[in-house]
Image (cartoon, rainbow, N blue to C red; front, side):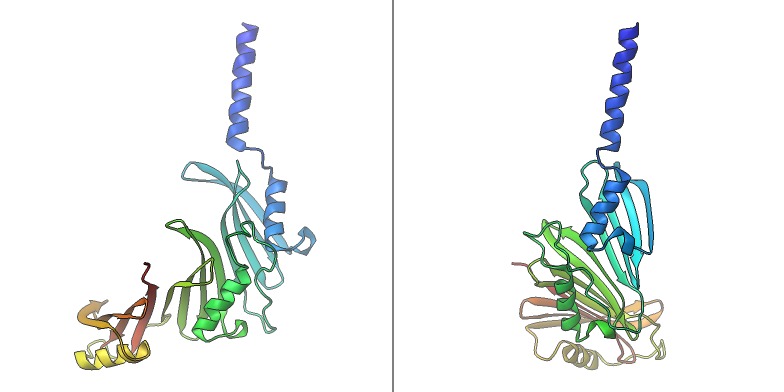
Length: 250
């Protein structure tokens, strides 16, 4: 009877070890701080809690240093970083590069700050020109990418940049409601002209069709140019609501 109880206790202990893994809370914090390139003393606030995602147990870690804020998700069993988010709160001083420390996948992923600079440069901005800069590492069809978003004026920008530095997707949309009349309706030829101007002129193909968005008349335009596909939404007053550019993968 004692042996049977001992066996049961051993099974329970082993199950707990598998469930909770070998990564402690302190080790998870060290992993996140090391990836962010800051010390524990430099973190103004630090929070950590355990959670589950699709049956997988993970640590969710948040910390701040100055105007910068990090959010990490770390697999409890393996210690791998499975989620990352970085944001710079509005600050009057120039914003320092997001992260210059070596990545946990240095052989595949370029420096995060460099990838952010690629997106900002493509949009025509510097770091001081934007607010709510955020970036998160992700995978898409086996490709490692950095998802980047930021705001400028009345627009929100979103980028997917491949680890090689190639832009996979670029998109902006209005952060406010269109100002013109909801019943306004420009001609299809004018909508096509505005769409062509938005993407810089000539195109290999362009298609325009009518639609409605929350009761507002909208033209949806789709165009191909070079190696990209463009989607442009234009309301009846001629205001561009959004522009999306996606790389046509070969």
